[in-house]
Image (cartoon, rainbow, N blue to C red):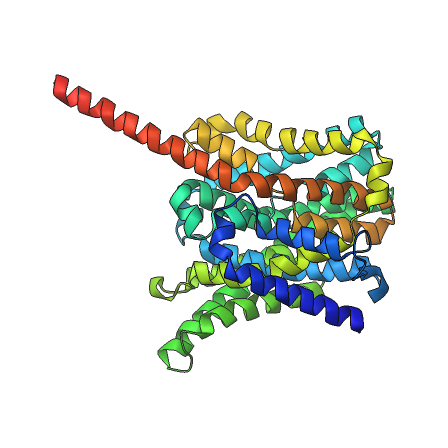
Length: 423
């Protein structure tokens, strides 16, 4: 109980402190995940030894539940941040990013893990699938808020937001196939994968989430018209809807992560234009309340000894994954991504595909099912590297992109003026 009290005090104090300097953090090379991660490392067993998550019980189970809650809230915020017409107008772009993009990222990650670390193909496939999804928690630190609106155009912000929201849940079939084959190396694994992971958990989770979200949104409008609720209820509505869908779908063994995003998306579609939940309010509130605790907990359980045992391979795998997992895939798909017309768009979307809380969840879940420790060791290493690198580069890259686009726009305007003068 004492450890919990210390953890509660530390997390609350850190959240309070970061709230004071929120705008400063948004305009610096630091990010909330990096600061929270550093706090977890300092407070953990390797430095001050003030907090030890393993003494609370099963650290994997605690982290699994915490990641689910964090992802649910991040996905709900993401769903309300995306404009109502976005999916309809950009369905081709997002379909390519979600289907071909995910397959490409998973395939490249699998190859890198197999050839650099020497793992067998099945284990490499599993870890590659775990680190495939783009994380909405880390991504929100760059694509949401006033700073992001000033530096990045909507086409980039919404593209990353939608992809990070949808592919967290869509990664489940990719993760479950190798996980089931490790557990049950026979034809029954394929049958269970298709019936359970694909049909019930993925498709069923989407359908249930859409129905619940749409009905909840319509009921909110009915309650508003009847004068039964106030404007301040909107934020609590999104939180309650996220927890309801997550808990309900997990209780019936369906895909709670994908279901939450579907519910938030459907609820947003059901609301009137003037009833949209304020994006900045959601991002700031949810970001501080859920991002800080999960990365602090992550900092407490990092497997430092196992990382050092990997030697230089630990460095090479992080560098290789961050450079090759996503950027080459997005650049290769560039000719088909007409809604991202500029090379700079492709580079920004291709670079900023962070690996974070979603990968944490799939890693600890897979570890609990297979008991293969390498899953957590490699996954946590890549998550750690991505949190640091994408955290430090997010704001500078966005600022560089903004400067480039301004110069490009000015050059185009100048060329147009010259043409007019010539004419």
